[in-house]
Length: 290
Image (cartoon, rainbow, N blue to C red; front, side, top):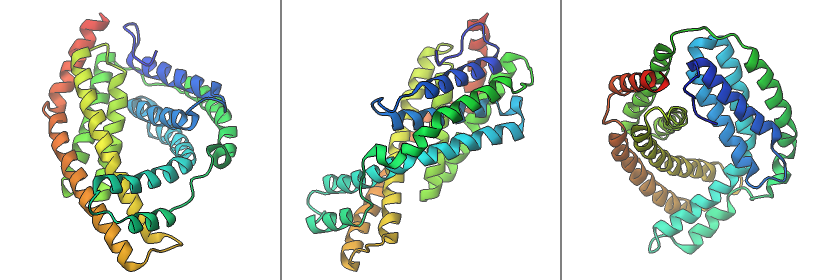
């Protein structure tokens, strides 16, 4: 199960969950529905969980493993990115039914990369996934972990994750695309991380998880629109200046709206300080685990 168990030491429990995720990746079949999405999600979860082990693994081992799954996720993203660009154009039409000119939408759609069949784009990547997962499983299973008191280890790991999200949230007040994208990454990592301890503090984790998930979705919309603008500006089939200006105006309206919405949602996430949250989590872990 992708949760920590009562009998787990913190570091061994997190490693066990990572190994289980790698087993799932190794067993994945090309015929599985939603395979690419599932594999990308596995990479994101593994990277988030590895971060909880950074102190126990050491920087060198952490960076090496994190890089492997970062690169694999990027290779898997090619098809998803093309799909999302087209979906973002359609979202502009839906958001501004009285303002989005049909000709502008059509021109923007034509300037984007074609959406090609999934298996045609990533066949070579899928052939590598099982090998990468199997190799990573063996390495991670054998990596030495520094042993610490499990309550202290859990408290330190989650406090660092919470503070990374808080730092990114503060920077995102400027509402720049880069700041909001960094915040999104920290929000999603913290979401995956707290799912491991959802049995320790069910009500609190469920509430926080729902808020993080909603916030990540809003930040995802912002990121997709920012990427759409970049793609239209760099397209090998550039739009006529007037049409480009019209589409960019709509994009900027949506970027501002999504950015402000994210800031409002972020306030709900931040109601408890990192220190209070992690202290409470550590206390409940001690009582829960016995």
